[in-house]
Amino acid sequence: MDIVSRGRTTILKRWRHLFTCAIIIVVIPILLLQVLPKARADSNGIWQQYTYNGPAGSRPYFVYTPANYQVGTAVPMIVMLHGCTQTPADFAAGTQMDQLADQKQFIVVYPQQTSTYNQEKCWNWFDSADQSRGSGEPAIIAGIVQAVEQTTSQWTIDTHHIYAAGLSAGAAMTVILGATYPDIFAAIGVQSGLEYKAATTSTDSFTALRQGGPDPTQQGQAAYNAMGSAARVVPTITFHGTSDYLVYPINGEQVVRQWMQTNHLASHNTYNASFNSPTSTTNGQVAGGHSYSVYTWNDNNGNEVQEYWLVNGMGHGWSGGSSSGSYTDPQGPGATPAIYNFFMNHPA
Image 1 (cartoon, rainbow, N blue to C red):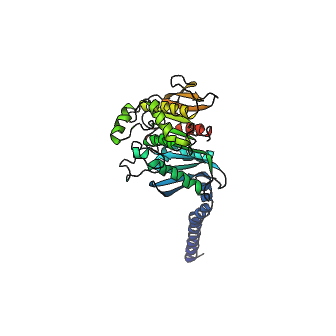
Image 2: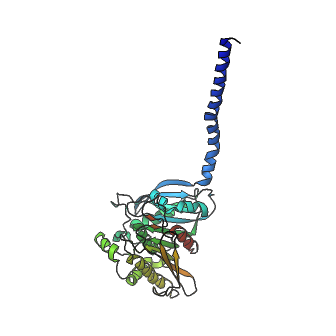
Image 3: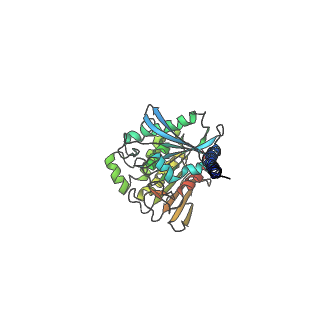
């Protein structure tokens, strides 16, 4: 074979090798792309943004539809209210509620407070205009719930299993929702929050954060009055850290006491709990984390109405949350699964 022929053969071999590599580099990823979207769809749900416009006002909100959800299957809805400075995406990352939704199949709704309505993106729990049914932020959030319910082309909501949970300012607004829309929310979850009408002005709010609000028995009556003709027992699960120096621990106790009175009045004398005499007390310890106590109170028929998780040494944040979100403490007991389990045991 001459030099030219040998050179041609060598070049052809090299080109064949390069062509084979090109097939591997270009074609195989294209084939994989046909498969990967399906795998991704099976492991992650859908996160969508909407805007609510109603008589009481307008807010953005996000809806998480879990992986494998089928329209026509009635599922629960959990409304999640973020704290000050947070966004729905941040709150979702910290609480990991969407991942639980994938496992358990429920819809998660994240109303968003924006700096247009509060400079720090806090829900205005301390504003008297946002503490009653039919107006302000409670009416907007209730309107968002109804908008999701009515979008039957995308979701089928089990109206006996609609709940609200929140952190900090979101928790205080959750308390307000329980008092103003007990006909919508079957139960509520309160992480580092405050009692109903703990403050009615922004000035009072700073006092309440540190010292608590008015007498919780009095506020329990006020919350019951706010329920009006829709009055009913609203089961409540409350989390608070003993080292919370943003919303001091007295507020967690006041939330429990306030709802104890509200639910007593709404129960027609079938719920007669005493804060100092819980039905059960359970102590726990997170491995490498915080110790905690769980107190429960039952009604006259033995049905649990309230839970109070007091986490020793925990500051201001979502107990057991992920460090991928703000205001979380991964060393606390898991608030997300505890709140979900409590909710599922308390349909409307």
